[in-house]
Length: 177
Picture 1 (cartoon, rainbow, N blue to C red):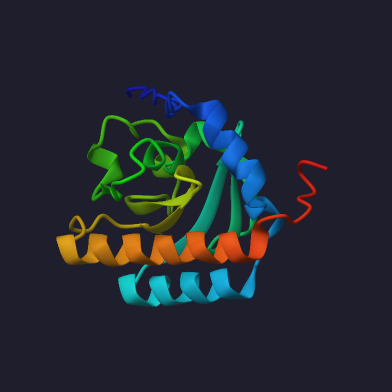
Picture 2: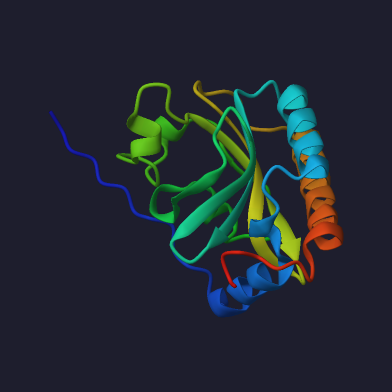
């Protein structure tokens, strides 16, 4: 028997500016927003994924504000794939088979029964900062996204950012009140 240890995602160099953008966005105060839900449902169908979510990464948490196949609410940032995806705000982060990726060896989300094996996430930008991710996951490994699929997921993440900007800015967010 071997023991695997995973490394939590590192923090972006500009974490304080990124977290300030999260607070300004009001996104955490938009659980199950109808426009975001429509985007999540569409992405889940198009990618034939078991799970799709809009997550907002803030402090020690990853907040699922809209989810298909996952409950909304806070989850630990230490085990999150989205914590890795926000590190490259201009790239879609894709893991075709998490069981063979050293960054996720030993991660409880990968190792549990029905755990994440495939992950693709496009950063959601607000004021130029990656505040969260539009992601799709699956319990089985699959081929990496094609360039066309990456562009599509990125466009959908930009639509999420626009919806957050229109719905969330200036909202009173209970987390920060």
